[in-house]
Length: 607
Ligand SMILES: Nc1ncnc2c1ncn2[C@@H]1O[C@H](COP(=O)(O)OP(=O)(O)OP(=O)(O)O)[C@@H](O)[C@H]1O
Image (cartoon, rainbow, N blue to C red; front, side):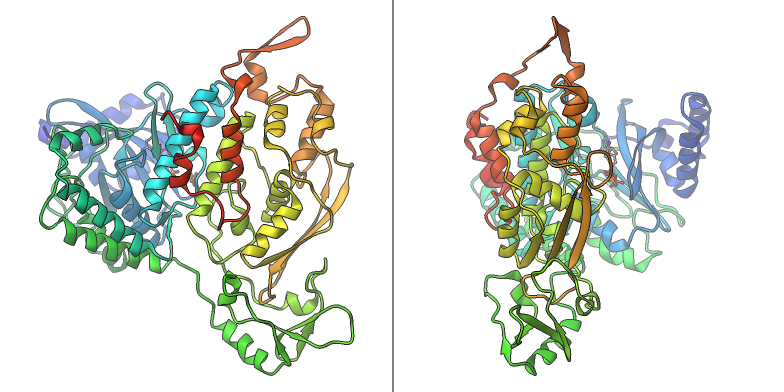
C-alpha cells in the first residue's frame, strides 16, 4: 500500500484542491492561523501537493507545528504533524534534530520522522501525528497508576536515546506526548539535542548490539511484534533521496512526494551548509530488516551524528584559559586540581600567599582577588570572562549542573528533568518550579533538596556555591502529600519561611577561573523570586487547608466541610515512588540514577 500525493488521485496538481479546502476551512480557524497556513503554503509550495493543512497545533520558540492531512493511495486519509522550523534556525541545529529523529526515532516511545521538505531557508519536518492531551489539563485527573506508567514510558524513551549518546536537553511534559485513551507516548522536539562526549562509542555499541540481535536470528514475526509496540504508528524505515523521498514500511501507506522541482526539493542543494550536514541524514536507513549494507549505513549514521554533534559540544576550554595558565606560572603556589574534578580540565588558578586570613586567588597577571568563597564578587572577578556552558532547556526543568554552568554535562540532565516531572505528578502541581532566572531556580531546588546537599553536590562538579542561609532538605513524601492536600498544615510540616528574608547566592568555579554568578533575592510571598516553600506557605495561609493543588481541588467534592477526593491510588503511594524520585533528583549528576537503571527500579517490577 502506498500513499499518494494529492495529484496522483486525479486532483489538480496546481494547488486548486488546497485552495478549495482552505476556503472551506475559513471561519473555523482564527485569522492568525489562516494567515500562518497561507504563509507556509507560499514558503514551501511543495507541501500543498501532498498535504492539506488543517490547523496549527503547536507553537514553540523555534517552530510552529501544523496538522496536515494526506491522502493515501488506498484512499485513506492520514494525519501528519508538520513542524515548520523558524527560518533563522542554524543548519547544524536542523541537522541535529533530523539526525536524532532518524537515528533514534520510531521506536521505544520516540517520535519518528516521515519526510523533510526544504525550500530556501524554510524547513518542514513531517512526522506521524499523535493525538495527545496537555499535562496541564489532565494532571488533576491522573491516577497514581497512570502517573507511574507515564514516568516508566518516559524513562524508556530516555534509555533509548541515551544509548545513542543523545542528550535531549528539553525534557518536559510538552515534549512527551501522551494519549490517555490509547496509552501511547512519544518523545518529540530534538531541537536542543546534543551528543555526549562519547556519542560515537555509544552508537557503535548499539550498532553492534543490533547486528548481533540480527545474527541471533530474530524472526520477521518478532520484528513485527516489536514494531507493533511502537508508541504511534511510526514508519520504521526512512529512505529519502531526491527521487524517492520515502520508502513505505510493509503494510503501511506513506505519502509520496511530488517529483522534485527546481525550486523545492527534499534537501535540494541550494544551501551548501545545510545539505552538507543533512545529506547523511536523508540517506539514513533505520529499518529493522537486515541488509548487508546496514552496518555501513549505521557507521555512516555514526559519523554523521559525530559530525553534527561535535560542533555543538562546548566541553573544551577556551583559548582564554591558556592565558590564565601562563599567568599562573608566575605565581608562588599552584593549587592542584582534583583529577576527577571536571574543573580540572581548565588550567587552575593560583593561590598566593597573603597576610590576610582569607586565601587570595590570582587568575590574571597582577590581578589578585580575595572574594573567593565569600558572599560578594569583587571587581577582579567581574572582569573575568563568562563561563561558557550549554544552557539550553526550559526553566524549571534544568538540572543543578546546568544552572551552575557546569561545562561537563551528560545524559543525567534529562534524568533530572524526568525527576521534576515525577515531582509534578506526585504532588499534582504543574509546573512545579517557576523561576525567572537560574539563580532563583537553584534556590528553589535548594528549598526542596537542601542547601548543604546542593553545595556538596556542586563541589563534585567543580562549583563552589555560597548561600547566605541554610535550607534543610525536605522529605519528599511529606512535601508531595502536603501539596496534594493529604496532610494538614504545611506550616507545621514544611519549613516555615520568614517574611521578606533577603538571601544571597553565589556560584563560582571551585577553582575560580570564570566570573562567578551571584544574586540577592528577597524571599517574600507575592512576587518573582519567591521560593517554593514560601509560595506554598503563603497559599496555604491565604486559602486554608482546602486550597491544595488547583486541579485536585476541581476533582474534589466538599461534604460537611470535609474534602472528599476520589483517591485514584493517591492514598497508597508506595515508598518506592519517593525512593525513585529521590534518585532521579539526585543533585550530583555522577551518582544520579540512569534511565536504564531507573527502569529496573522496584517501582516498575511488574512492568
Ligand atoms: N508528532 C506530533 N504529533 C502531534 N503533536 C505534535 C507532534 N510534534 C509536535 N507536536 C505539538 O507541537 C508542539 C510543539 O512541538 P515542538 O516541541 O517540537 O516545537 P518547539 O518549537 O521546539 O517547541 P518548544 O519551543 O515549546 O520546545 C508540541 O508540544 C506538541 O503539542
